[in-house]
Length: 180
Image (tube, rainbow, N blue to C red):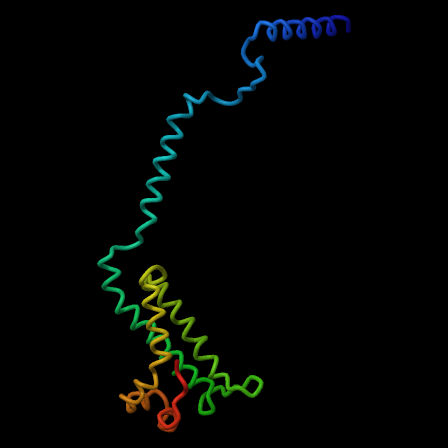
C-alpha cells in the first residue's frame, strides 16, 4: 500500500510542476476534441450543403408551369364545390339516399362544404397545387363557385337540372341565397 500512495504523491507533484511551468492544458483552458484546423474543411462542406439546400427550397416549380396551372387550379377549385354540392344533394337531401337532419338542420347544408373541402385538398395534392399562387388560384376558384353558383344556374338552368332536380333549380332561381 505504501507503494501506491507514494506513486500518487509523485504524480501529484509532477502535475504541480507542469502547472508552474505553464504547459498545455494548464492555463485554465481545457481543449477537447480535434483542433479547429482539422474541422475547418468539414465546416465549409456543411455550409456549402446548407446554402445549396436553401437555394433549392426557394423555387418549387417553374414560373411558366405556375402560369399554366393557374386556370387549372381555378377550374379544380370550382369543380370541387360543384361536385360537393351535387354529392351532398344526391346523398343527404330529402330526395337523396340518406336524408339526415342534425338538430333540425339538413345535413346537406354542411356536407357540401365538407365534401368540397376534402375533394379540393385531394385535387390540390394530386396536381401539386398546395403552395404559392397555385394554392391561391385553387381557393379563388373554390370561393368563386360558392358565391357565383346561382349566377351560373341562371345562365345554364338545364345543365344544373341534369345534376340536381328541376324543383331544386326552380327553387334556387326563385329564391337565391344571399351572397357577399
